[in-house]
Image 1 (cartoon, helix red, strand yellow):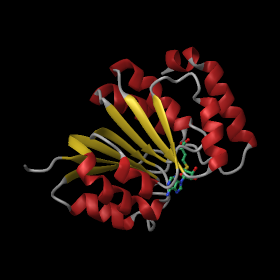
Image 2: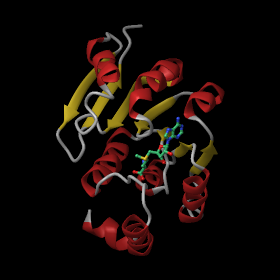
Image 3: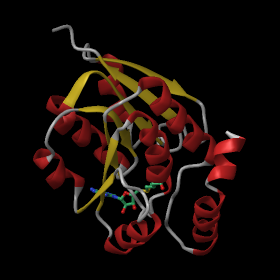
Image 4: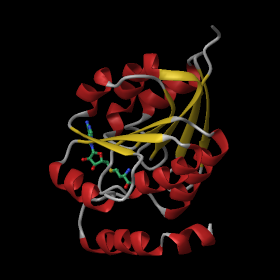
Length: 188
Ligand SMILES: C[S@@+](CC[C@H](N)C(=O)[O-])C[C@H]1O[C@@H](n2cnc3c(N)ncnc32)[C@H](O)[C@@H]1O
């Protein structure tokens, strides 16, 4: 990953300054960013959805990987200040579509099906997001959820669902705040 970090050192330096100076950005940690990047390279999605843009740090990592497989990244943020900051940070990223508003209201309006989803907004709402997303996932899509260890009780309903449902095969990785990867594999 050193070559990638060198390639994007100016953009990444800007995110680092914001992380150190602006409260409540809640950016993913570096390992998680690198995992997202790798998962995009490996799965070669066409459509990516992120719920919880903040200032666009994780969006940036998804976007630079997505560029290599001609994928687009839809990303949703409800806080106007963070949405606008992300707009500035992502202005050179041609494959990112930013959406402002509550994910619960935007998801039903999204067109097409996604191959890769990253959940990183309200933790107790993960269960609502996944329920709304069921008819918007391609077969074998992966749903990556952050904070499943750090916010264990808030995401319990979500984890129970993806673990027990026959629609998913799910695994939790003890990386940073805890990442769950659920593969959508309905029988039909
Ligand atoms: C953990 S931060 C996202 C961090 C970002 N993924 C990153 O790593 O740079 C969660 C974000 O989700 C947003 N959020 C919370 N509830 C939301 C909702 N219902 N719809 C859309 N965004 C929401 C918050 O405003 C916050 O900016």
